[in-house]
Length: 219
Image (tube, rainbow, N blue to C red):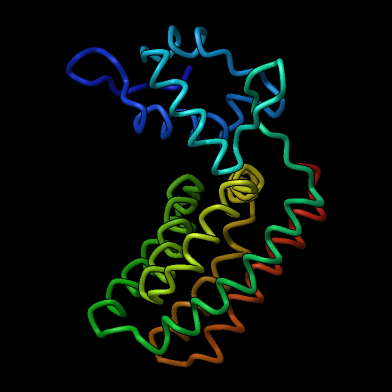
């Protein structure tokens, strides 16, 4: 089962439990439509019933958990069609963020992005899909942060959470990193060169590629 980090009191906090359960859902350790019984989760993860309740409420806001009348909570099942729709909406929003990031980015922030590009290249070279997936997440988060588009950021976070299981599985597919790496490098290059149009288009094309990969897969 997923490793957990306990607090000094021996109980996992609500925020820690959110992170642990989110990871378990993304990785498929907790599967779609699986019931999430508060008492069982409290025993399994070393948390209080109250913290379990808070964590499930937070994950329901993120779209990873759903409440079923008279049946409690369960892992929310997201269909391929819904994942595609989410990815298409993300493409529009993240293209906007890439444009704004290109307009705003500082020299120090550009240096950080280019360093991240190098890390991604090295991860692909050594076949480390886990490291590449983490770099992927950092890249998208960093561009959104640089863009300073708070409304878009909040919306993207909610949307991404709902379809993140599909994206996680895609990132771990053999050969997928070598497909997406040139796309990520194009985004980084355009943003760092203050090419707003190029950054927007590169991000749009990248997320269209993600949608195409979801559509073609059997996830």
